[in-house]
Image (cartoon, rainbow, N blue to C red; front, side, top):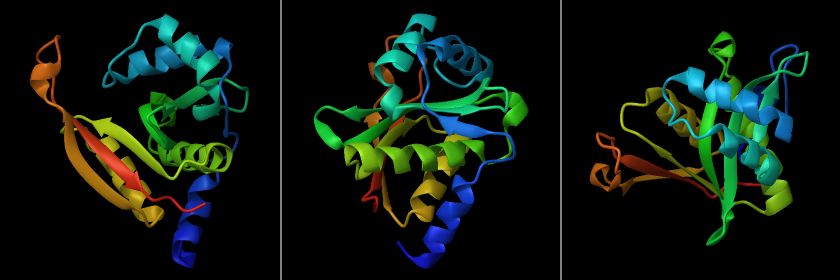
Length: 179
């Protein structure tokens, strides 16, 4: 990582006043479900799945909290069993009242810093539907900040989804990440 990349990364790890990033606990599951539902862009999972996620994948998930501890954003992710050095980012969401502050980028930087240390992650993957410019920008800028390569390829064609119409999902593969 160059000095310029380190400066950019440090800038993004700093949180807006009063906000902090930490691991979720089970009680956060309902707030994550609400934030996902209110986003109107994410595929909404069942409320049960967010509770399970906060229990079983807390180590690879990040929650942004307001000063009072209320979740205002989250990233759900997991380490891929077949690729144990790869973090798959499942969902990224920020409460509408907190958007436009770079919070998603700060959460992504904070989460990946943690999982590279704790799990030995050297790359991340995510899927993005074409036209989701916010996610495209988030992950493209992440790769640039970290001086990592970015590869894109269609992972799931639209016809594979039983709940048509559904856009294809494009796999973004970013790495290697430096520790």
